[in-house]
Image (cartoon, rainbow, N blue to C red; front, side, top):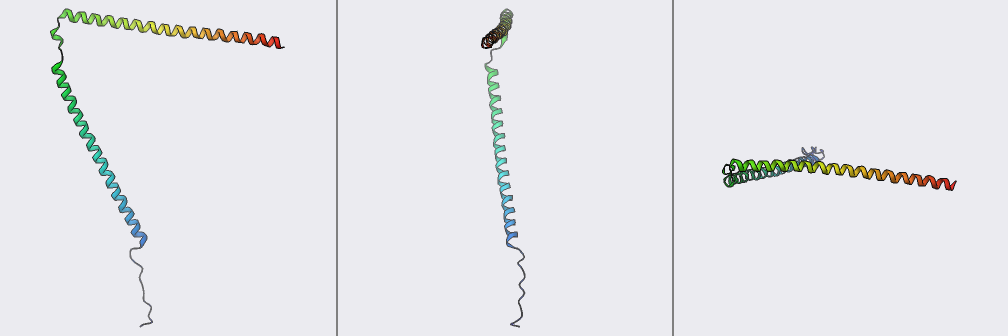
Length: 133
């Protein structure tokens, strides 16, 4: 019996299987941590948005209380204000049209000057070429 070989069975869990299981477990824990961080960030952002909405509501209520209603103005006063606003709009439109016309005319004049310069340079070059030949 002392000479009988002892049969050693291979281990059920090898080292590579153990490392792979630990790696998968580590990835799962990392996934849970990242997920929790994203949930916290989103929750914080929603709370901030709710706070901003509340602030806007309060500001609007405060603004409504302080607004100066036009009902205190007479019809003649509102008519005068509208007339001045219409006149300002017409003046702004005519000013814009004149500025646009001036810009286009200036660009046209610059193009004429550039064409004239190029024509003069071409003439001088032709004259010099004739002299050289």
